[in-house]
Image 1 (cartoon, rainbow, N blue to C red):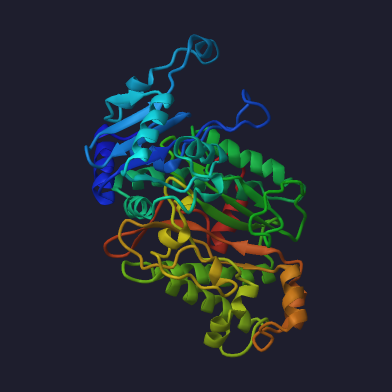
Image 2: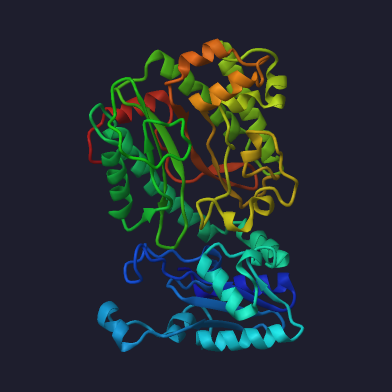
Length: 465
């Protein structure tokens, strides 16, 4: 946690931005795996934690924009709870650490909200993503769960995003810590990749690399020989000679800040000539995107240039044809690069995705609808304080190839006979995390192995780190 003054200033700024009414922020409850006393690892709502700091379940916070008062609501634990959990501080004691002196029970919150809701004061809340919080809004405010998203406060959404999008130095320090740990997670995987090793073994070692230093994974680990499936969480395969292995994994540190990195490595000690060719195209696209990072540039333009680099490289290999600019304009590159280039990052690995990428990543602009670029989570102009990922890739997805070939999609730009030779290639992605500075950018965390030479050198090393 940061000093309590940090949280006090955050709340003051939010109340001033919203202007009037009550701001209701719901913390998360524990989520049972199969019964109430066997929950998943608790993860607090990031916006609640950003403003109130408290990192335990069954809480809600209220900020009164008119009086300036902040209140935390929750029920203190009982003696029966202490038997299982040991002695715990009271909610009042915990709240005071973050500059909040008034607390109350959840029953008191329900009574307050019913009273205020019956009057003419606005109660601002964010769109809930947990079903239990949708039920609370129904019980307290009479808002149907199906309508809770549309009834949420646009003013609060925009105000929260306006604060959380700009990372302060203490936040950047936390992300940098997470990135450093994440690099070690990836170095572990690179060293382990070899014929006969299982995806599950690597995923377990990557998780251990985070857990052993007091961190945890920031999202379910992607550790796969099937890199063409972008979010592949299956770990049941054994690595074989001639394949490539893709890891997408990041650490989350105790403060809740996250990192997100991707690496691709040959299962054999060295890249084959063909693997080198494709890998170098993705790396060229990656480095080109990085070189463009600076305040004022629209990230959509960075994405389009990274797509041109991929298109140009695949054209040189005979997989694409025609004018490069026309091919990218038509979306032909999306056969190989069907996703976005990066996303905002902070306390959430996809920062504030629960509040909507249209606001977070596009600043309210209308998002493209064309296949490929429609998956671009970030398109707005970059500003100092933004933290984001860069992660272009090349993927050979047999099902997508078949669909486009049968429909003749972008046939003027794609040499399908050549593309079909790569049906079993899988996919390649590199990913790193960056801070936009006043003059350009900063790589967050230490450098992970990224060039072919660095990957092969790391690959040849023995564990442990």
